[in-house]
Length: 277
Image (cartoon, rainbow, N blue to C red):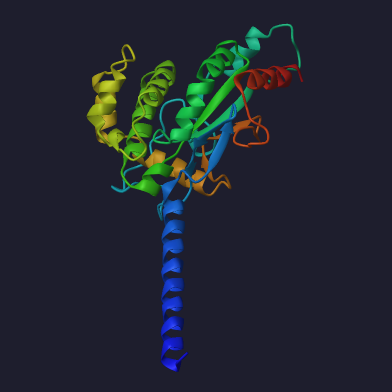
């Protein structure tokens, strides 16, 4: 074989190798930005989750417009970044009269993004059970609203929906719970930023009796809680948790491990066992 032919074949191999490297790099970038690369087992089914791969604001205390951070009514926790849902500790204790030593209902902590399909899967599977445990005073839920999908795919639907949910909390905690459920039942496809439309969010709020007041409209349209939402997302991004939904019971992660799938009945057993401790 001539020297020229050998060099020509070597050059072709090098070009093929470089092309394959470029294709692998593109595939890796797509996986990183696609947010569906993580898989969670729930009742034996795989679902998509939101994965932290987004930038955070340099100044988490301010939104894009520099507006003040305004927590919704009744927000609790450090920085008042948590929306509680369920019977208060006081009312739960009153319902447990004659059972001394009880510290109140166990807490389910949920980090969610209203655009996240994995969050919708969690809500669709566990909604009824969560409400039953809440209404029985066995469990209290603390919601942390985050915006991973906005950061990964672009758009503002996560922020807009979270702000609207916080506006519902301003009206009435019971309306927050109802509206929270409406938003997940009507969640658009992940790549469609339909929740960026305030009009769409207000129209969905009509499904919650008495929610759409002039004050609610102003809150949604004016982005009253946008900076609060961004602060909540920034804290989550630095929390050590990497995806939504992140679900903790009594501070311990209980959801998303394929080796230990969670079911509604298992959640009930865990809550009741914690209640007996």
